[in-house]
Image (cartoon, rainbow, N blue to C red):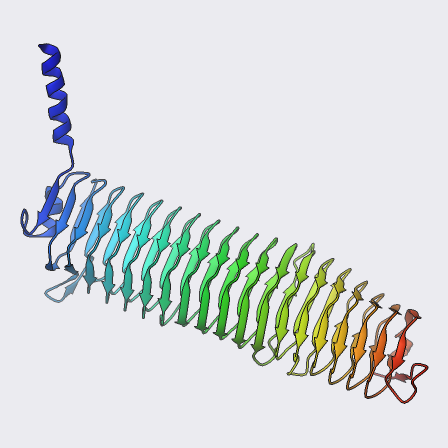
Length: 479
């Protein structure tokens, strides 16, 4: 008998611990009264209607708020406040429309979830969450005073939200391991579209349009930024500062600064597209970088198609990229020990610059081409750099220019240059197995300013550029 009574007591205790569902206004007239009556784990269901309330709770975990076409208004008799200010793990808010007030939701605790809510005209944030593993899903935020969605804590999941016409960032996440995906930010007045701080974020398939800042701004190591679309930003399309960044197949159109700006040792940029920006298409600085299969069309006054530089060690690969119609150099590369391969510059240097400009030390450029450059086709500077199998066609001035020390041209071709086939300012320049044809001036011009320009080797080259077709027509000049 005692065993049976003990079992019944356990069942009774378990029943008492079961979560309750509290209905507003059926069980309690206000949300605040329902919260006061609730215990951890309870669900508060709010029926259709408008509720002007500032509600606070603390020390209750796993409270669930469910709106059934309910409007939660943060303005009470002309006084704005926070609609729901709560502290507790596992808080869940779903299905409400919030309007007016300061911050609509201010929630502290791990595992907070906010889904399918609408936030309209808040003075501060629409959603503010502080805690690990927060979820903000399928919400709409419109017309706020500060950030639309602000999450502070590791492991945030921010997905399928729309933020429109806010004053500051549409989405702001501060914490490692964030996952921000499939969100849309439109027309915020005074900051970035999406800002993420904290290592290891994933930022994918978002759309940002018409922001008064950068489209996506990231300060984090190991950032993964993929398939985002940025159109019309007053600053950069995408800005990333942190090692090992990976930017893949993003699209940027019409920015006031660089299309993509990255500071990242070990950074990887693949398949990204930039068009119609006012500064550089891609500005990349870092050691051991990989820049492959990217494209830029039309940069603004003096902007480079690709500006690539290094910190200290250099190295990396720049391969199969395409620059078209950049105002500055199509490619400006200053590094140490980098390999540049298969890149194309077309119609670049309209500000009086070059198709491709290679500087630094010990770099290799292979099978690259510059067509219709406004100044020189390919310019090799620095020291101990080698251009192999490269071509310049229809440059307004020289096809190739070499300065610096001990640089080399091998198996390169200049066709229909408006100036010389080759201009040498350098010392110890090696030129072998090259062809210079169709130039409007001399085959080769050599600077004699202080007798500084010299060739290390000059052999097995073909010429048909000036008035003399068999032997090179050489012009010595003082620069």
